Image (cartoon, rainbow, N blue to C red):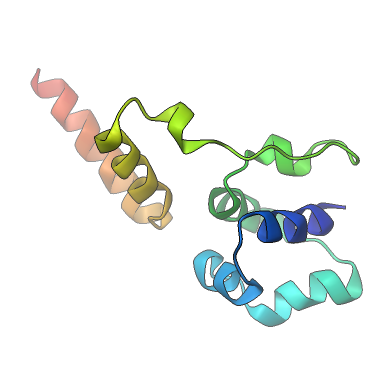
Length: 111
Protein backbone atom coordinates (compact mmCIF):
# COMPACT_ATOMS: atom_id res chain seq x y z
CA UNK A 1 0.00 0.00 0.00
CA UNK A 2 1.31 3.43 -0.95
CA UNK A 3 0.49 5.04 2.38
CA UNK A 4 2.56 2.41 4.21
CA UNK A 5 5.56 3.23 2.00
CA UNK A 6 5.05 6.92 2.72
CA UNK A 7 5.13 6.40 6.49
CA UNK A 8 8.22 4.22 6.16
CA UNK A 9 9.95 6.94 4.14
CA UNK A 10 8.90 9.64 6.60
CA UNK A 11 10.70 7.67 9.30
CA UNK A 12 13.75 7.03 7.11
CA UNK A 13 14.02 10.72 6.31
CA UNK A 14 13.88 11.57 10.00
CA UNK A 15 10.96 13.97 9.70
CA UNK A 16 7.77 14.16 11.67
CA UNK A 17 4.30 13.88 10.18
CA UNK A 18 3.85 17.57 10.99
CA UNK A 19 7.01 18.49 9.04
CA UNK A 20 5.87 16.26 6.18
CA UNK A 21 2.52 18.04 6.23
CA UNK A 22 4.17 21.46 6.10
CA UNK A 23 6.55 20.51 3.29
CA UNK A 24 3.88 18.88 1.12
CA UNK A 25 0.98 21.20 1.90
CA UNK A 26 -1.15 18.18 2.81
CA UNK A 27 -3.18 18.59 5.98
CA UNK A 28 -2.20 16.59 9.03
CA UNK A 29 -5.74 15.20 9.25
CA UNK A 30 -5.47 13.84 5.70
CA UNK A 31 -2.14 12.21 6.52
CA UNK A 32 -3.66 10.71 9.67
CA UNK A 33 -6.54 9.35 7.61
CA UNK A 34 -4.06 7.48 5.41
CA UNK A 35 -2.83 5.65 8.49
CA UNK A 36 -6.11 5.31 10.37
CA UNK A 37 -8.41 4.46 7.47
CA UNK A 38 -5.84 2.75 5.25
CA UNK A 39 -6.45 5.17 2.40
CA UNK A 40 -3.93 6.45 -0.13
CA UNK A 41 -3.07 10.00 -1.23
CA UNK A 42 -4.77 11.46 -4.26
CA UNK A 43 -2.86 11.30 -7.52
CA UNK A 44 -2.33 15.07 -7.66
CA UNK A 45 -0.22 14.89 -4.47
CA UNK A 46 2.16 12.12 -5.57
CA UNK A 47 4.82 14.31 -7.21
CA UNK A 48 5.09 16.62 -4.20
CA UNK A 49 5.24 13.62 -1.84
CA UNK A 50 8.03 12.07 -3.93
CA UNK A 51 9.92 15.35 -3.97
CA UNK A 52 9.77 15.72 -0.19
CA UNK A 53 10.64 12.07 0.45
CA UNK A 54 13.37 12.03 -2.22
CA UNK A 55 12.04 9.08 -4.21
CA UNK A 56 10.77 8.76 -7.75
CA UNK A 57 7.07 8.16 -8.43
CA UNK A 58 8.02 4.75 -9.82
CA UNK A 59 9.74 3.86 -6.55
CA UNK A 60 6.78 5.03 -4.48
CA UNK A 61 4.08 3.51 -6.66
CA UNK A 62 6.01 0.39 -7.66
CA UNK A 63 4.99 -3.14 -6.89
CA UNK A 64 3.96 -3.92 -3.37
CA UNK A 65 6.82 -5.52 -1.53
CA UNK A 66 9.48 -3.59 -3.39
CA UNK A 67 11.38 -1.28 -1.16
CA UNK A 68 11.56 2.33 -2.38
CA UNK A 69 15.07 3.68 -2.81
CA UNK A 70 16.01 7.13 -1.69
CA UNK A 71 17.57 9.39 -4.28
CA UNK A 72 21.08 10.34 -3.20
CA UNK A 73 21.48 14.06 -3.94
CA UNK A 74 25.25 13.54 -4.22
CA UNK A 75 24.71 11.31 -7.25
CA UNK A 76 22.75 13.95 -9.10
CA UNK A 77 25.04 16.93 -8.34
CA UNK A 78 28.55 17.27 -9.73
CA UNK A 79 29.65 19.82 -7.13
CA UNK A 80 28.47 21.82 -4.13
CA UNK A 81 26.98 24.61 -6.27
CA UNK A 82 24.88 22.13 -8.23
CA UNK A 83 23.79 20.46 -5.01
CA UNK A 84 22.58 23.81 -3.63
CA UNK A 85 20.72 24.54 -6.86
CA UNK A 86 19.10 21.07 -6.98
CA UNK A 87 18.00 21.16 -3.35
CA UNK A 88 16.65 24.68 -3.77
CA UNK A 89 14.79 23.71 -6.93
CA UNK A 90 13.26 20.63 -5.29
CA UNK A 91 11.85 22.76 -2.47
CA UNK A 92 10.15 25.31 -4.74
CA UNK A 93 6.43 25.22 -5.49
CA UNK A 94 5.44 24.29 -9.05
CA UNK A 95 4.97 27.81 -10.45
CA UNK A 96 8.39 28.92 -9.23
CA UNK A 97 9.97 25.82 -10.76
CA UNK A 98 8.42 26.78 -14.09
CA UNK A 99 9.93 30.26 -13.79
CA UNK A 100 13.40 28.83 -13.07
CA UNK A 101 13.14 26.50 -16.07
CA UNK A 102 12.07 29.41 -18.28
CA UNK A 103 14.99 31.50 -17.04
CA UNK A 104 17.38 28.62 -17.71
CA UNK A 105 16.05 28.23 -21.26
CA UNK A 106 16.52 31.98 -21.88
CA UNK A 107 20.09 31.81 -20.59
CA UNK A 108 20.90 28.89 -22.85
CA UNK A 109 19.57 30.78 -25.88
CA UNK A 110 21.99 33.63 -25.15
CA UNK A 111 25.02 31.42 -25.72
